[in-house]
Image (tube, rainbow, N blue to C red; front, side, top):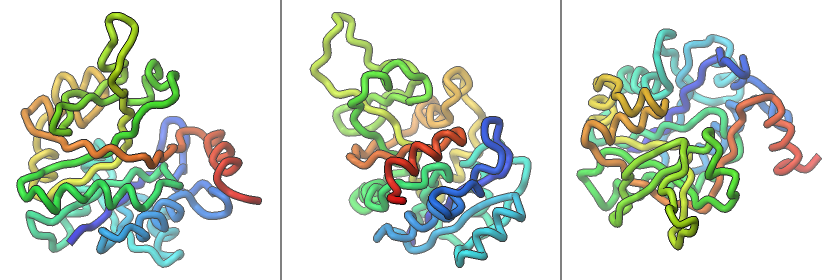
Length: 244
């Protein structure tokens, strides 16, 4: 079984109530949910939230929601809190979908989970896309990732990696996309690990996995997934992807 869980909280430093903001006439959380259920590899989609208004909104449009604790430090912890309430086996695959990416392609979720079909020892995967906009190389909000020759992450950073010392590079640069898949047993182990120094320095929780010596398979996709960080981002997405 493969289950997708969308962690969703109301409070946000830059955009309170973001999951309920309308994107082309529908709440953002509904847009994300409807994209997720189209993925062929997913058996079940749920929203994990600590907010009753979000819970009621999801159930009103026919989605499935589950209430979680309110004092959780990250979306990953909220996903795990939801998993603990479900009868899941240790080797089942859990997908963590960011709730602020309302127009992602369902096919990228199929790509994300595909490595688990061929590698029964795999614990975690994520997505990346080749950088085509040079501004992403220096934008700290665009997280970069570099890979080894087997497609596993070497490092994630808000800085440009690798850095071309001579000013030129023949290798592609990749931007990390905020989708994760884990086996349930790996997710449980990950959430029990203490925060790592690299994670605290870059404010990237996936670095905890690498710093503790575990692998992350990076799947390269061609499907971008713009996120909504501020209300202005909604206007940009509506203008580009939705016909009036």
